[in-house]
Length: 125
Length: 125
Length: 125
Length: 125
Image (cartoon, rainbow over all chains, first blue to last red; front, side):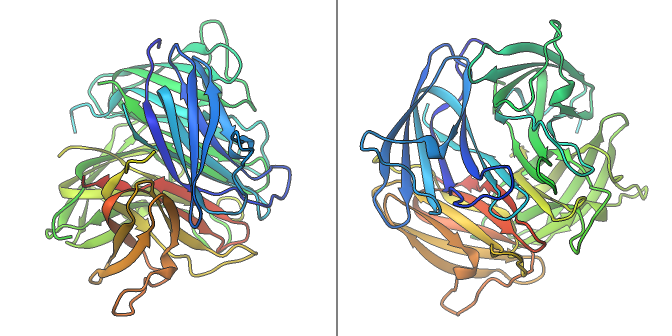
């Protein structure tokens, strides 16, 4: 329980922030990060698009022995760039310590929510 | 069919017990464990949070050649702690024998159910 | 494209045949098998339960260079046993040649369908 | 960030293009491809069926450092063949450079959308 687990490099090809919501639940995506090690994790997150250059160098910190369910709308890099809504994109997450990453989306564009989830694709050490 | 399969250490980064339900189906999460070996599995389950220390040492037993779909609301450790509803968290499951773990969530917060599922992330031997 | 791909041993911990349906779509589970090799695949499928002995030796054939989306309600073994509806269970699938297996469930218990899917957990050669 | 990641050979056993839609969202499937390398990826896509020969040699290009969320209804090979709607099938994707592939389906056959997603099964180098 006191050692780190997971990988340092993760990918999520199907990113999409639904622009609309209905009912009480807001449409959103989460990058769910588990850092069960003894050291805080510094994440670098890059977003790839279909027809423009990537938006790079979003950063986020997940403390030791903590999880963080990061909403993709929270991300803002030093150039104040954010991920646009309603656009197909993909995510790359690089961590300085091993972590485990799962991606989930709640879509309430039409009434009554829909959910989907998957582990990220992992690489690195 | 008579040998054990799977891994001894599993992680699920996206845990969340929906606090509300509607219709006939109650919102819930399940840790679905398959023990297809000849020996009962003793599970130790730890829950990680965003802004507090982990709740540790939930225990559960899955008999030999059995599955168990463990609802996360069933878990209670020796200190009588339980996993709070409506809070983002993550799960770590350690087994003394290899098992296979899939996580599923049914959310009926808004009318008409939503489902999501994924295999856990596995480590260990 | 002419060689086989995948594994010979697969597991799906979260099996459940929803007993009810509403609307036009019937609730069901599918074991989706892809055999992209040159040899037909003979599958042996076992079902594990929470509180009874496994039901074993369902068989199914998937031809060379074919897929088959096997509904779990179709399975019947030599003892005429079937998988009961409305009961948590788990699946083990053994193939004599490598295949790739994904599990999906459509639940229309409450109105408006819900979907979930995951790759199976693979072992074997 | 400047090296390629992923695998060159991917499989998705559960393909199905829902023939009907309701509400504002059209039912569809997407093969979500992330090419984070420096070289454009040339994809060859084959579709396997339950009771007929595969439809082969759909092609698609994903530029360097780009993602593409390919709708399966867009695919057309040199013989002008397309994937039929409402039929169970499976997908094989071969890339000349490593990529990462996730499959998602939005089904709005009955009112209110349903979502499911999974990483593809990867092989190759």
